[in-house]
Image (cartoon, rainbow, N blue to C red):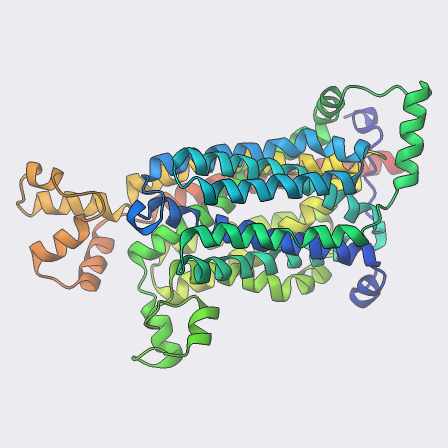
Length: 512
């Protein structure tokens, strides 16, 4: 591979400062954009975490009353817009200015939340989701571009680790806000999120764009004709065609398929096959807990006897929120691609565990392992792209980070629920069981969607938990998860090869 294929990309890996030296070297602009990201994420996850519940909730309860097929359409459109818009808007931030794009994106996002509140139907929620996706797509590159320009190569590993930790504080608090608000009424969720993100206007008053003089100087040279500037889409396409960027897209798409299946499919799996009351019994005894504070922070049911699926999954954000800086300090010692490969292997192992076991504590272990893997990959992807980006194209390259995410999330959004439906759907398994036990196909077909298992409970006279265990043992529930893990393994092999190739290029660049 000739060195000119990555001309302009700085592939050096710089020795990182120690943990405390890195933290103290971060300036006020870094902490300011961290605060803005935190506010934006609380609002975002407030809606994202409860979107499926809102979609399924009947109109009589203030929900959308749509089926999951229609909900899938909304999520697919949301995924595509949110992940592909930054590929082109990233470059706008570099040229127009980060403060301006952050301001505009906040207004777009407020409009999205209010649209969801004012129009509680399929089209209203789709329009709101599209506005939210567009706003997020414009918001991200401006924030992340600021972060790159307000840090040095010596502290980027720690900076991205802390930034990712802040994101997950938002990811942890958002769902808890939504749970509280939706018990009042669904539209309160959207009004609360619109109000929360409005705080970013206050942060913008104190925001000063780093590298603004250089940006204005470059713009002046473009205006005078001293520098020729390509059309933005052509410029983005030119950078995307570089092998170093193109191969990155391909090898990481598989990981993002794996990653999103945890959030889109695992809650359904937990709700259908995992008895989470065992966790509450282990911690508080057979009666559970009536402590409202514990019920809130642990995501328990209102009677305090079991962990809700969202509560189980919130362990992911909770872990990252409290330990990401430690993982960042640990992985700073290793090459970026090595850390990302280990992270991918941990995540694959976690998905395999979900397939093999349905014991509640094993699912907890799987979520813990997955979270460690995620902490090794997610902050590193931004650090990697920020480092290799040519001068004046930092935000554009950070927009590219979203591409493999977009490919993986869009494909997962379509295929992972389908895989689950084929191998693990309790509804379908219950219907088949009713037929095999002598109920006529006509009677089975007449059962309303979502009620087959309870009908099976009545038909057999068995209690729900032993019946669930029997169905689990009789069917290959784990197969959906093994297929998802296999996609992750292909990605891990790709990351390994990519890391080796990158190392060869780094040596070429050093020799040149």
